Image (cartoon, helix red, strand yellow):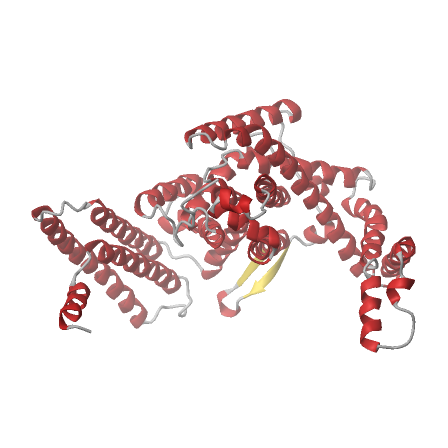
Length: 518
């Protein structure tokens, strides 16, 4: 390597990029501010003992002073960077420098406010844990709805503002499915679920018996015996026999559980009933999404980006009005058909030792676990299946994907269906959580889920998940931490959207989009 090239490389390393350093400055300020907020909450809630040791107080004071000094140093650096750029001939913009510094100051001020509130009005640790519990439950629902936004944006580079109404109609579908079970079960969920299980469980087990042909084929090939090839024995004529055999096994197992293990039988029929309600809600949302894509979005696919956005807003208002005319203004609740297994008792206590006990809602546990399972399933579909590869190919380049054999229209429709199914499941979860289902029920949750998608990074699936949980935690913990009333939840959520758009428009994990979009 020549000396000139080596000197050039060293000069590049020595060059300071103000934009890069201002971004790092913002990130470090945010991390330090979060650390101070968590520390002062632990200090005042009894985590370090009934009386906080002196070293914990000293450390919190050091953090506060360090953040103030950090802000002053940042201001000095900002002034210097602005002076250098304005006096140079490159005419490089200074807006990014100012934005990053302002964002850092906002985090520092929020940390100062939380510290002041926590020191003046200390709350027990179980109170904060209860708020954390609520935030996780909300976050799981927000994440499921946000995934629909990010899937559509990753494929079409548009925001489906009718997604909240798709979720609302899925919640209505789940409500009608729940009432179907209750009406067929002498006004109880368990009786209706038991009737449903009498044919659903045998059918499911019978379907599981259908692959016996492949199992026997593999067994015969492994044995290498002289018996007849199982593929000649288990022909198409044996399919009804296998289905009936599996149904008999499933029916016998269900009846046996009812006699020998009533508690396990109750769990089985409750799970079957909840799955039925959830699946109906998901199917309802999926059907609405198919019609929406075909009527409102497909004809405008090659139009300017503003046109599909206006169409989405119009579709949102249209679906709201249709739901209002069909279902009326009276809210519907799931409480009439709530399963006994989730309501008797409603909660169980999580013992934290000397810090106290936290009541955990059974419905909340089911919502959180279901959300995580659905998100993991979506991630598997996108990364490990042929359809997922097609989605990623269409998001990268529609024309090239079509030349390679991908059915672009079908992939786009299935993407809408996938996002709508997750939203429908979220609507059913909100119904079981106690929300009233109304025509405008999906509007606020749709906006919050959009906030979560932008917060995590629009078009980024892990970002939508992270953004959903983060927004849920901020909404649950924010009012108490800042010393506000709980009525400020929506204001805090949408203020967070404004702050993210201003200071971090690409989100926490960054926006993932291709240069060419469908």
